[in-house]
Length: 180
Image 1: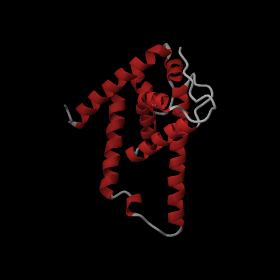
Image 2: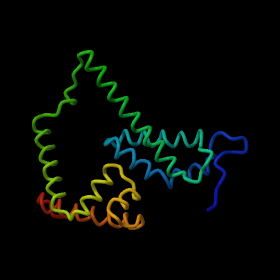
Image 3: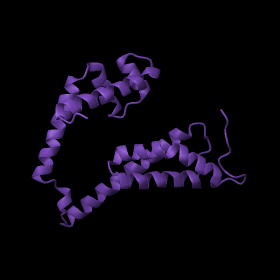
Image 4: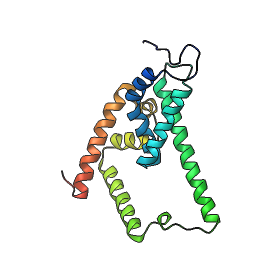
């Protein structure tokens, strides 16, 4: 493994060439993590940009697991964003300010319930191992944890998850009538 110096000789900010290389290779994963937590593409972009700003301004001293460092920073920033939004909503609510977007319409609530019912039905039709893998992964479990719980080698978890996701998509399309 080649380790490149992350900061100039005097320490501090990351050199521009190295930063661009790291940004190009890690941005998609950082953005996906933020989008998964936030459920909002615009907020996820903001969090991803802030993550790379932190990398540029104060790179980690130990760079052996840079992907893990970026994932942790993005996760923390995403949770901070969610906390900030929750605090804002509480303040507005306490002041008597109501936003129509905070309360789902009857139609939106019915659609959400139908979607939840359909997802549960799809999960019920999957083999137990597929269902377990998907539920564990989307609950935040890592590959090693999943491997231990379903008694397989950690190296095979990625393949099992990919197959389970493909089966889920196929079953979802079939049950929802959205073949294609």
